[in-house]
Amino acid sequence: MGESTVRLTTAQAIIRYLNVQFIETDGVRQRLFGGGFGIFGHGNVTCLGEALYDHKDTLPLYRGQNEQGMGFAAAAYAKYHKRRRFMFCTASAGPGTANLLTASALAHANRLPMLMLCGDTFLTRLPDPVLQQLEHYNNPTFGVNDAFQAVTRYWDRITHPAQVIQSLPAALATMLDPADCGPAFLALPQDVQGWDYDFPLSFFEEKTHRIRRMTPDAAEVADAVALLKSAKRPVIIAGGGVQYSGAVDEITRFAEAHQIPVIETIAGRANMLNDHALNIGPVGVTGSDSANAVAESADVIFSVGSRLQDFTTGSWTAFAKDAKIISLNAARHDAGKHQSLPVVGDAKCGLAQIETAMTGYMAPASWTGFAQAERKKWDAYVAQNVATGNRPNSYAQVIGVVNALCGKRDRVVAAAGGLPAEVTANWRTLDIGTVDVEFGFSCMGYELAGGWGARIAQSEVEPEADTIVFTGDGSYMLMNSDIYSSVLTQKKMIVLVLDNGGFAVINKLQNNTGNESFNNLLADTPTIPDPFAVDFVAHAAAMGAHAVRADTPQQLEEAFKAAKAADKTSVIVMNVDAFEGWTTEGHTWWEVGTPHVTDNPKVREKHLEIEASRAKQRKGV
Image (cartoon, rainbow, N blue to C red; front, side):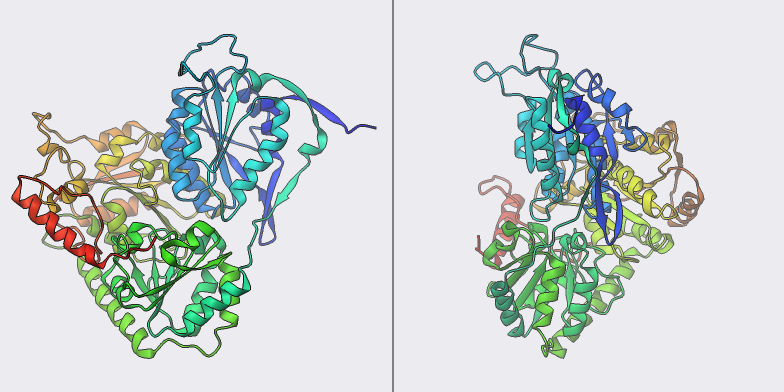
């Protein structure tokens, strides 16, 4: 007898398959997909919308206001769940799908899983050219969906219903793979969505997934151990992969057993508590003097779960040229960067294997003492930096006030602009895994949309905690509609809108490279004859949020306490100074392009000053 089948449309089969996918983590089994984000248009409403309606109770569909925001929310959801649960996004053909490009790039850069189910032009081409179709005269198969091939880990166009049987498992396998994790994209032609096929019933049996843990090669582990044991000044870099692997306890025990200082990347913030004796602070361009002093002096650098991007490495000037790097990473691509000694494998497994062979090794007490002394100096600077007093309001002051009043498990979300540096440098971690600073792709607009996605995830696990969003006026103006989303869906956020009159951090960079302020601050934009401030309080209130203005740190304290007590999204607006109050310490060199020829003597002087620091740059691949 032949296998039992069921006749379904392509769209119905996709959603039915997603509905029976589960994941088991630490003995707990739950749905792999927490649901999805969707905006319907003619490219997805008639077929995919029909299929989703039948599963609306088990795969809740959150209605977005903007497809880019949906993608940001999906990325933040996956990040909260440490890549063990994720969301799908569905968009119509044309501009709806195109709006997801930036979000897909963000997920790709940050190695975050999300599934995009996007409408496409008709496979038969009978009605061509159709609404929103991009016509390429010499390649009729080429369209906007093809742009996603550059920003996804898995890409496919479904040209026949039977193809789903191969494509969906392949997409899920990519999103669940620790080494190849990232966004997956399925282009769904509008006619193919509705075509039917006799699918085998076995395809829709419940499936339980588990995250694969790759054991490192014994020879690579042995090489790493030998190098670590030779170290006189070792340091551990704790990256975001530590949390994705669930290796926080392992890296802490490893550091404690051998008294090795630990420094954190931006993605690795909140791998250790602020007051842990071996937490020497954040490293790199947006780091701390303490971590950077240790990084610069270290002879062996043990990087765990980091892709070693330029903000971590100071464009590869943060470490001594002769320092040796060991890189433990699930991704071969990341493990071998800059002539590192690679240990390709899971962080949790790799740390356990290395630890087994490290018996008897202890970092010199003088080295650990040096690192801890540097951290004490940095703590004193941060305390002074966040203190309120007779000076203009600053990002650091706001961060200090919120940090002192927030709950242990409250989650902090920030992105792009000046706030990632200020949060990374000044936030004092109260609990593990509570900081989300999106700086992999540095996307303005992630803050509010990501906050919404993070809150959806947080409310599934720890609804008593809060999601706290730090955003500047520039990012707010770029993407603010998910304040409305959070109110509609009753997913409370606390939003700090810090208004400095434009794109102040880029103005700072402009000034720091000898250039005059131009086109960043509203006051310095020639095409704006009469600048005025946006009434962010009224705007946020119009979207249903509680909204207040705070003019002083004391008013901020009261507003934040009220926001904590409130039952829906609260927005607190505060003006901060565009020029004073920046965190001026803790920065390594960062390579930016500066003019080699200029008539401006200040720009020329700064160019020479910047280029002089290039002598420290490692020239590895």
